[in-house]
Image (cartoon, rainbow, N blue to C red):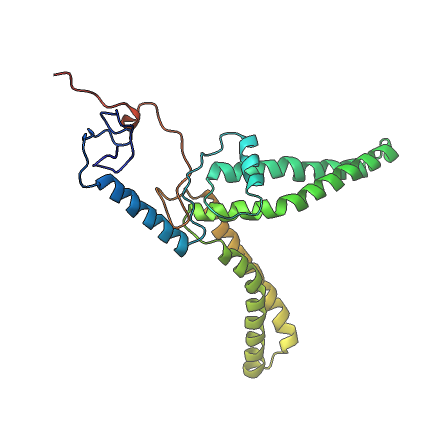
Length: 250
């Protein structure tokens, strides 16, 4: 039995819709619910054809470090969908604990003069394992950053394009500046171009850092966006939509 109000499918013996709480009609001569389902299916197929990154399933927000790490490894090479801030920062914490700290500890052990042979060997092993984990975590780190951008309804590929095109553009602009200074003021372009190029590269990456910092701190968009449904947040128990419909006894 389909609800005439929202189109949700309900059990044949249901009196009220489990989705919207509206009273169900015993008959549906015009097939309203069926048409609603067909229209929704056509909209979903259109979304898939327009954007392959659209995800119809709203996944729960990871509440623990282990859950977030499992999600990121399960989506190892996938940028589809959206990632909440909790998922993103839990992954950064995992990388800090398994890459940055072990490398720091290993370097200290290698440079230690106490039990030099033992600490050097142990420190080398720790650093080698941390570097191996770093190589393993590079791809999921990029993918979770992309999904974090998707949660803000922004495309992630422009970040990579900017990283590769930034230095090239900076070098080209620096060459033009050096040529102009040579023609106008008589400066040697070999003395001007390298410092200008370095300055432009630093400025471009500073802007990239600021933009990335904004996106990883910004909240996700409310409701669906062009990349899919939002991650499921925990609902309060007092939410009136979660309460069963009240049946009038009069």
